Structures are given as C-alpha cells and as structure tokens.
Length: 133
Picture 1 (cartoon, rainbow, N blue to C red):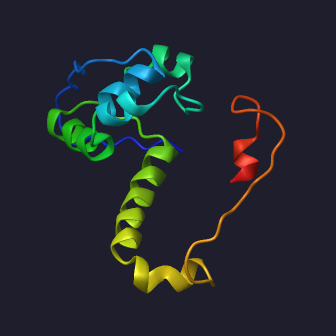
Picture 2: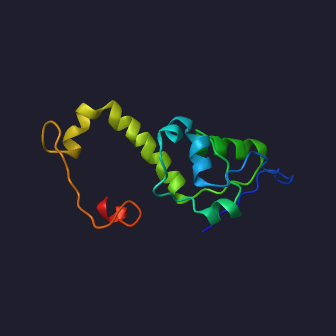
C-alpha cells in the first residue's frame, strides 16, 4: 500500500539526472568494471518497458544516493521491493565475508570446499534459474 508524506509546503522538483534506456546501459553506468568483463546480460529485473516508462538513473550507490537526493532535493522516489532486499543482502554479505571463519558452521557442516553440480534442462535463456537456486 503506497504511503505519501508531505514534508514541505512547496512542490517537488523535477528529476534531471540522466536516464538509461537499456539494461546494458544501466550495468555500464552502475558498474563499469563489471560491464567491461561481461559478455551479455542473461537475466534482469529491468524490462525494456520498465526502462522506457520510468526515469531510471544509474548510480554506483543507487539506493542510498537516491534516497538522500530525493529527500534533499524534494523529488519523488519510487522504491521497488528488490531495491530494499538487495541493500539488506549487500550489507549482510559484507558482514559474512568479514566474519567467514566464525560464521562457517551456520552455513555448512563440512571443512574445506565441496563441488556442487546442478542439472537442469535448457540453456542460459530457457533454464529455470529460479528453480536451481
């Protein structure tokens, strides 16, 4: 359910930052190093219609920067559920990586590394990646 907060008595300002038109442009602008190493994007939540119908601007620190800028400049901000979850997961990832030795027993019962093989019908475009996860 949407929530609207009015914190000032003047109208919002217009967002004038650059807009991306494709998922490839989005990746290039948010993570240039990964973009150069990437051959193609297999899956994305940024559909062509989403990018065409909305003014989505790239940023390396997108969620925090967008929230700060929207608050400071009195612009509208649309937050998708995955934006929140990716922010949470990123911070959890930093903590887990920094404390891997202490947290290992919460994730695996064995010592060392084991190889995991997953079989699924199809190729990169047709395989059900969600089911494999």
